[in-house]
Image (cartoon, rainbow, N blue to C red; front, side, top):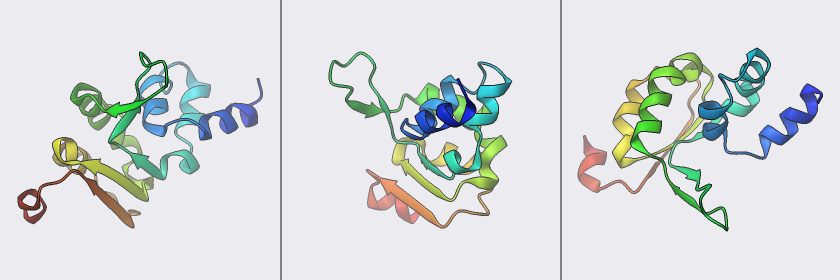
Amino acid sequence: MPDEVLFLIFQKLNTVELLSSLADVNQRFHRLTFDRLLIRDLNMTTITNINSFYDQNCLMDLNVVLRICKNILPQIHSQVQKLTVEQDSMKEILRAGNYPQLYSLSLINCEEEILYQ
């Protein structure tokens, strides 16, 4: 399948799921999943529940978040422009790298006390 077709398919999928599941398949997938157009907007709050008949979204497992923070964010942090995080994983994600291109940070389900910290 041509790269262009794969890229169009990848654009329809959740970027974080792509990075965590396809980036290490082979060099071609790694190159496509790490494309700057895909990784500029990261939603680190939900993933698709593959056990659900209706493809419902659920909160991201902390182990998945930690793996992404350790293995993926250090490689892409400088290209992320929009980032969506939730309270339980916010600290790990923000500490995973410097985000010089970041212009939008969305905080989901955060308590007021946490925001002041």
